[in-house]
Length: 607
Image (cartoon, rainbow, N blue to C red):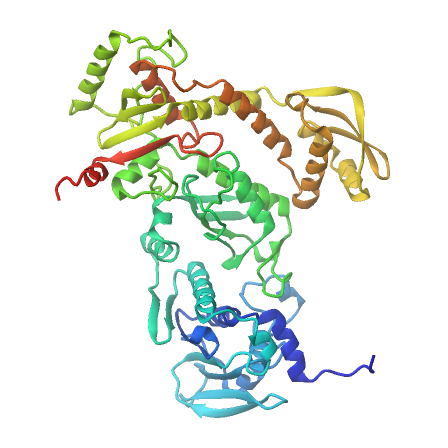
């Protein structure tokens, strides 16, 4: 080992660049955030050769004073914070003062700016050269605002340049950064050009309709057409944005945008809360899509926990987790067939999930459910009664005639899922409403109805506990034992009674009665792990729901069971009144819809 030496300014900046400047997209992110902090409402991004040859960002912000231009390229030089109190209450996107110095150490950087305070009306240009990165200042014509040009990225660090991907890949990452930031500021105009070709021209969006249009341009129209607008506020937290219907799911988590006070993040606490909200409505292996905005006091979140500021730490993580989960859980539960059908009439668009057609919610919130045919109107029958031997019922013809009469009556109000007209292969119910055809998987639909009723019954009767005949001793870590000791009351509310008997040992005395056949030791370990990481656990609820789901599956009407017309209509009316009835317990769709226009296209009518 050689003796300790003081690193040169250039080398120190290049080391810092290893954290801040990973690839061209990282440079674009840092510079765009600087422009937004400067109050810009118009941003132009020019890229050449995937950002390796040139990155040019021009804004119309407040600009940089002539005397501050050279200082702006120094390490830890910023106008956004001055003392520790500012660091604990950050409202800007940047605050460390590292980005420009790091970028200039691995590229040829020039910055031209004019501030409103420059009395002569001229702009000034600063560039850095040489080993000591001396700043050269010269006058330059420029409107108010700042332009930063970054040329030949990593020209002096060839090892870093080798890790870059193809031009197409690097530009796609720049494109993704611009789209993410464009979703964070609807009031700002964004222009993106690559190799002198226009890629995006996003105009400012002020009205709700314009905001939704920008979301559609960035995330695709299918997302907007298959999403629900949510807006919730509680305990100093506000959540708003768009979440996809469960049937519009993705094979990858590539359409998930979450913002905290305007800053895009990817946080495991947030991901966990969203995942749990979709738990029993999402098909296995699929991922939800969402564009969500969380607003809270800046002092309640620490954004200085990650070099690229992609992660944050909440002061009260349990409060945030529970708020996100409950808000999204309620929003998804509130989606009824009537809402989806109303949106389908206005949009007429198809979803991504195979075999399903769903459309977006109204922007103004959740639409009230249309009242359909009651069980009394359907003859007072249910879909459990009668002989299901498969024999033809002579009353079916009369029942079908009455259904057709209802559908043809001009003044009749037809419910969202319409009226049943036939049963196909003992599996599917064919129903007709005013606008088209609805096909229902009767087993999947009845499974969801039964499942929701069983969950409600369990909640109303509260959690029943069962003492273990022989208490179970479990060896755990000291932190887990401390958690079991400190969170005894919380765990008891979940139905688990634990007692600490040693530094690294606990005893399980009682568990929820419905989980008596579960792997108790693994369950307790998982619950303690969740409480340690998230401040709470839904393992008990998850296991209980899994068992109720299995019971609901076995207790639902089976395939190849013949139903009468009134029984099929009773099932349709129950679906309209049941939460999450668009999916079965396993996330599969329970019904699909084809409008008359879509059916006409299939048969080339009118062409």
